Image 1 (cartoon, rainbow, N blue to C red):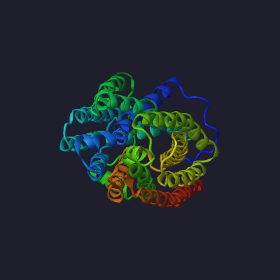
Image 2 (cartoon, rainbow, N blue to C red; image 1 turned 90 degrees about the vertical axis):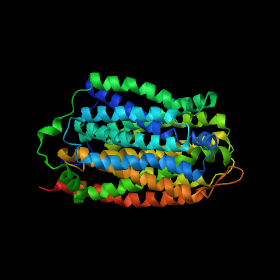
Image 3 (cartoon, rainbow, N blue to C red; image 1 turned 180 degrees about the vertical axis):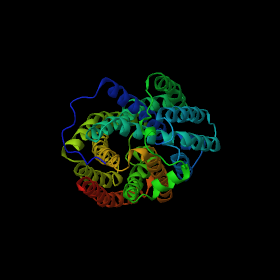
Image 4 (cartoon, helix red, strand yellow; image 1 turned 135 degrees about the vertical axis):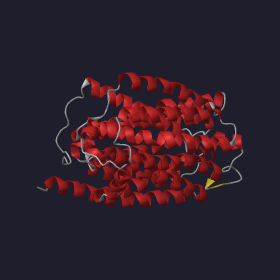
Length: 414
C-alpha cells in the first residue's frame, strides 16, 4: 500500500488521462444533476402532484435506498469484470430511469421511476471512483477528485439554472427528458473511446462473490471509512431536498431568482474545486478536511437560522457553505482511495457508495419528519436540521484523524 503522499504532484496529466478525467467528470455531472434536480424542482413538484414534504422526502430517499441496495448486490461482482463494461451497463439503465422520471404523471409513478433510476445510477459513482483509483497514482488523486467533483459545481452552473428555466417555461418533466437525451452522447463516448479498465483482473481474487463482498465489508481497515461516509452523507441529504422551498418561502427569494443563486454558487465552486484538490495533495488531505468541516459546520448553522435575506447575502452564504463541503468531500475521497487493496477497489467503492446512499436516504427521511410545512408555505424547524448536520460533522473529524493515522502507520511498517 502506497503511503499518503505529500510530495508535489506531477506537473500535468497525459492526454489520455485528461480525457478520462473529463469523461468521469461528465458522468458524475449527469448522475449528480439527476439527483439534485429534485431539490430545486421540489417547489414545483409538490404543488403539481399535490404531495406533502414527507411524501417528497420519500421520493428523494427512494432513489437513495434503491441505489444503496443495488450497490451492495453488485459489490461482490464489482472486481470480476472490466470496469468499462460495468459502466456501460449501469449508465444505460440510468438513462432509461431518467427518461421514466420525465414521463411520470403521478406521485406513484415518479416514486417508482426514482427507485429504478437509483438501482442503476447509484452504482455509477462507485465505478467512476474505482476507475480513477486504478488509473491515477495516490500523489495525483487529490487533483483528480477535485476535478471530478467540479461536476457538482457544473451541475449548478449549467444544469440547475437551465433546468429551472425549462421548468418555468414548460413544466418540471422537461429537465429530465433533456438530461436523458444528452446522456446518450456520453454513452457513445464511453463505448467508442474509453479503453478497457481491467488491470485488476490480473490480480488474485476470491472466486465466490458473496465471500468477496463479506470480506470487503468486514475488513477492519475498511470500517472507519465506511462509518465516515455514513455521516458525510447527512449534510447534503438533509439540507438539499428542502433547499428551494426554504429559499423561496423562508428567505423571501423569488422563484425566478433561484437560477442566479445556483449559477453564482456553481461558478465559484468550479473555481475552488480543483484548487482544493491541489491543496489536498500539497499540504495534506486531513488538514484540508479539518478546515472544510469547521467552515461548513459554521456556515450551515448560519444558513439554517436565516430569515428574510437579500439575494446577495444568500449567494455569499451558499458559496462559503459549498466551499466548506467541497473541502470535506475531495480530501476524504482522495484519502479513502488509499485504504483498499487493488483487488477490492470495486467492491470497496460500491459498498461505500451504497452506505452513503442508504444513510443519505435515512437522513432525508429524518429531515422530512423534522421539518414541517407551515400554512404560508414556510419550512419550519430547519435550524434543528442544522444542529444535526453540525454534530455529525464534528464526529467525522475524529474519524478522519484515525484513518489518517492508520495510513501513516501502515506506510511506516516494514
